[in-house]
Length: 343
Image (cartoon, rainbow, N blue to C red; front, side):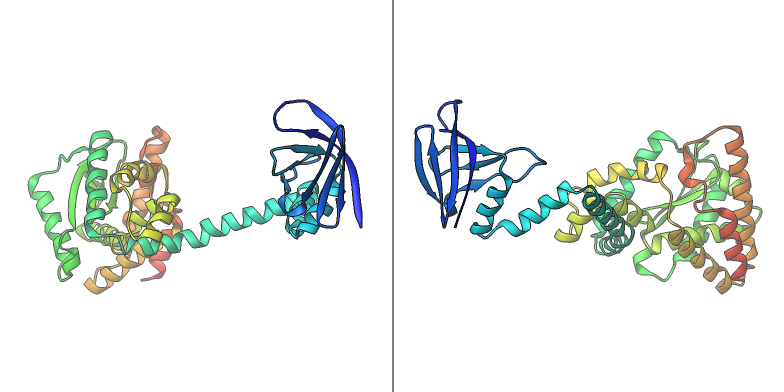
């Protein structure tokens, strides 16, 4: 059984093409015409992948090549080589608009599933296996960058800072892994009233947040919320989820190649992005549990959340500011309702 077609032959030494006839005969490919008379075993003939309706190029062991638009002969050649099924299937998908769109939709679904479901799982795993020294480096360098860019030393009195520090130390007492956690005070017009947690156990409270609180119980709820973020390593997980390449490498190797490089991306990730609802609700639940254990009315925490949102809303009406991360991520009213429902 044989199949034949015409093709343009190139000897591999000059650019001159010659018209020849290609014929597939059993396990061989015969080339004849234009002064050429050669026979090649099919197993030694290479075939370029198809690209739309362009001519197919065949490659021969002596350096020669041939181009032909006889796709059926090429498909027959590949079939006899035993490798035509998958290649032909892919080519048919490429030529079909409907199939190409279906493949694109499938790819998007896979990417969405990876980012939505697998990345958070990997981030959780990596966040809890990172060496403490790596997390400490990330937290320390992040604080240094924020101090240079948007934060200034606190204007609170020394006595007030010491009172809040003692409260924070009492809240984390009894857990050896928390002993390196610390409370920092800063002033920042860009951030406004807020508190936030950095990797390695650094909690930052702004002067405006302290001024906004009407009682120590309200500040206790805020600190308990940030401690909840630290316990679940939300800042580090958020960073990892936004650094997918680093996350995959860390998962496979058990370590981060360059903690310094990762630390350099933290301020941007914190300012430009927001925690997920799940992260915020986990931290709110931690605050509610603490307040209940201490016999503090849970509504005190809900009250400062509502006041914080009102304060930020007023800021946004006056002028946009950098601290959108710190504008208490998901919808505040929804968080307040959930907190009140947990009383």
